Length: 196
Image (cartoon, rainbow, N blue to C red; front, side, top):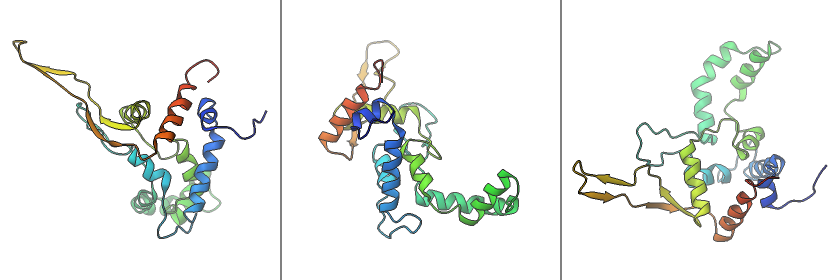
């Protein structure tokens, strides 16, 4: 049963992917689609980066990875790195895998509608870490401030006498206004209870 128009809160509560598909597609079209404008805003990709996704958070743990926010430049670089292999394996009218390789050979450098639609729901080529998501959600919950995450709370000397507390350090603000932060916070609260 369709619900008709729904709020951001309900879209989050019910994980209504179609709402976010439409947003991703609309932004892709606004930026010129297959023929991107020179000044394409790439709003979803830029905003994800400004939320701290696709870069190290600075957490006090070793071996942090950046994840991946697959914007237009990434798509082109990925195609450049794989084109020769795709062109060698690809075959028009071949097996399913050969047909995909053939298509990727010819136009794998283009950010397509499905790339933006998948991105809008965190799928496709998107890779984020749990600590990146925790940092972003924390910023939504605290009113918009991004903090460098820490696991440690204090550094204590071997004799236990000297204690240096590790204080939270702000690392910027979310790129959205206070009302949107509040709406996101309220919407995300609907996700957890039964029925969400």
